[in-house]
Length: 267
Image 1 (tube, rainbow, N blue to C red):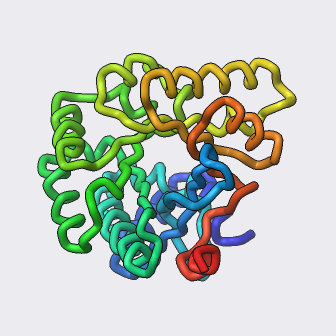
Image 2: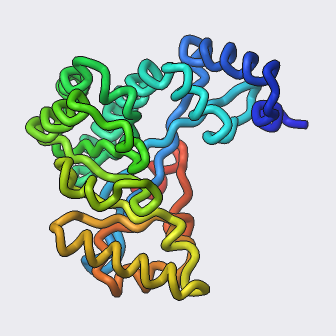
């Protein structure tokens, strides 16, 4: 049994071991970032317009699946310091790519509702941007739709401050939460990400086809930039382009890559 398999065993011993190992992972420099390209697909030939930073944990020489450790980071509150590390590392890396010739590149970073609830989070984002020189418009913070269930006045104030700085906000996994439509009205969003389940299930499912078409149409009608996730086949890409979708992510275009491998795509 490999190391990653050990972490998904649902026992108190495994859970305690996981929490202990994760608690030391940051100081041991075991986290790394992979980047999945985001392609602009509505302006002729697709091109890389941005990257999404994705957290990876290398433990005992192996990459642990994200679903095997990120929920634990959330549950223990460790997502706050780890999330700050992700933001710093991602912004610095994307600024380096901009200075090396990818001037149009933007950076998407996933944030937890726990981070948004921290007093001073927006100020810390401002400091990171200033320290690395990344324009605020080049940063997109992605929040998963289901996290809006526990929204608060603090979160709303934080989002408003981030937007006033020029940072853009994206609603991730749209269609999988409980308050999707109200989120579009209540929060200062500018980007809508269609959940992969509505994209990758096509064209086998007529219902998914209809839902995906409706979501893209709604996003465009409301003035959002729309991103389709889970584009794994040419038929998926053809469909979303035909519906007026702006951006696409998925294995058809590129898997998440370490920085050195992604650099080859730029070259």
